[in-house]
Length: 294
Image (tube, rainbow, N blue to C red):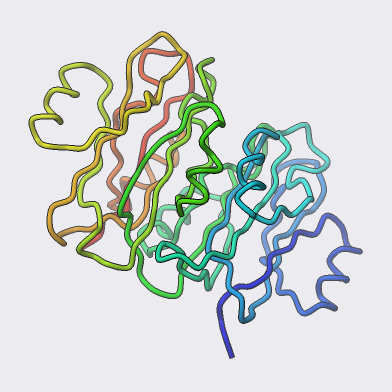
């Protein structure tokens, strides 16, 4: 019997819950609207022979256009139903490429300490807060795969023009805008997975000024050409990566926007790159975190 997840669903009320139970779905027992006055909402899953390999979240219409073109399936139930928060939808994809590895587990966290522990245990964190714009607790969804994966490539997109291309090329989007609150273009980081530890990235870094940029060039880092602060008119911020053998391969990345998260992740031993992706702007402080356990 397979343990790979093949279907995902969302319930917005008790009627939805009863229907999904009758269809053999299992509920993740965390209210996705916890801390708000909105609907009590749950995530559900079912295992089967045709596994899901990628899961994404959108918090506006434009984020989903490219996913739809790349044949992602949208669950048309707003995870912020009953609140004034952003309209958040879950999408999934069943891929067959070398970069697609079946998902076996899915979970949800509601506090920073549990987040940090999960991150060190090789779970991938979906970076969009499921209560985004709604208040309440900061809630995140997580997935875990049937075998160990590593990040082999990172890129970034500004606006929404390249979403379909990245999705079709096997990339997974970090679903939070690196320009959140900064007033620039919507910018997103993407990563691609591999099972081959020899192809994994070993180093990630961020530059927020010319001196840092020059130092990373001297260290032979590869630059992602998209400015993570694009359109703000402020500091140019870039993501950099490097491969160097199989020591300390990078397993996962995500974005942290909250002081409690940063403290909890650092306490758990997570590498938090404390160079603000919104350096020089009035936007949210955002740090990239990296799971790089030996």
